[in-house]
Length: 379
Figure 1 (tube, rainbow, N blue to C red):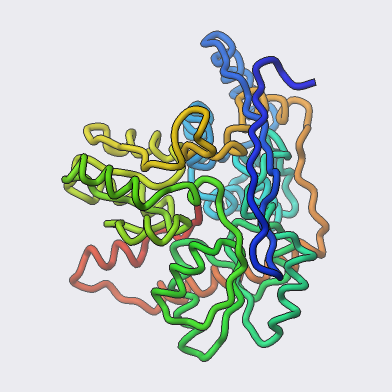
Figure 2 (figure 1 turned 45 degrees about the vertical axis):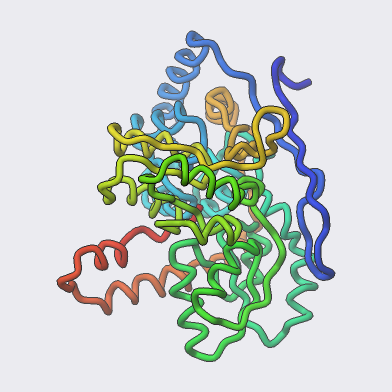
């Protein structure tokens, strides 16, 4: 029985080219809002349980603002998925509560196999993960045996275990550029928009899996152009999972971390943001005197599918965090052998990033240096 007020959100995505797989009839449970009294009760419950369970809470930028604030207040972190996992790996806590979506919990388990990984709701997933079935992906790989397999972080451990490289949205360009320089042909999965962006920027020979993010895929170039005319001084911030017509209008294209940094670096006072609206909470905290406008998606109210907020991220609730801690529910389990194999492509990316930084010396261009040494986390 679902809690009273819970909404079921459905998405329809038609199948595309032969040899690819996309989301069809994906769903999510969106939790009903809590009363102010219930919110405070659950927050106090979480604070107490984190201490008694020797646990730490890490949250993605896209989850509820209360969970983000509570994670930082209690010594956890709010970040992108890879930094969440790395923070948990390096933290002394025995238990890591990952508030995000399923692949983020798996990534945390891959990097911290000895720790207990809990999530508010194991059913909270990702359209990119759902749209890249491991068996179908293996068949796709078999059709292109001569290609180096590069997968985005937003994939399951079972898909990562089949990859040569894992990349994030801010280091993907660098890694694919280097592979292209070495003469590699690339098999890319799962996001077609991010893959196309990297292909355009690098000129690499890439075969693309035809997946997409239900949030970023909804941004519309035509509506964004109209909004730009209404706000002529606004800077356009775009995540590269967005369609090409949206990316083409961007002043800054980058990961969640890069977009967040842009609002403090830029002298602009108004920003149109083409990514999940969950990031606007952190942007407002980082630059309280500035104005942030959500980029247009497919419409409003009944005609809006995503409204720039992931419904699976919305499945993360304060009560879910507290229940996971108190009862040990929603624990992430991963076959150790699969985890070790999936870790190979992650370590390869981390080694690449470390080598790139280690071989670079500070220069006179501070803006360039800041971009070079920015975080490498994904969406």
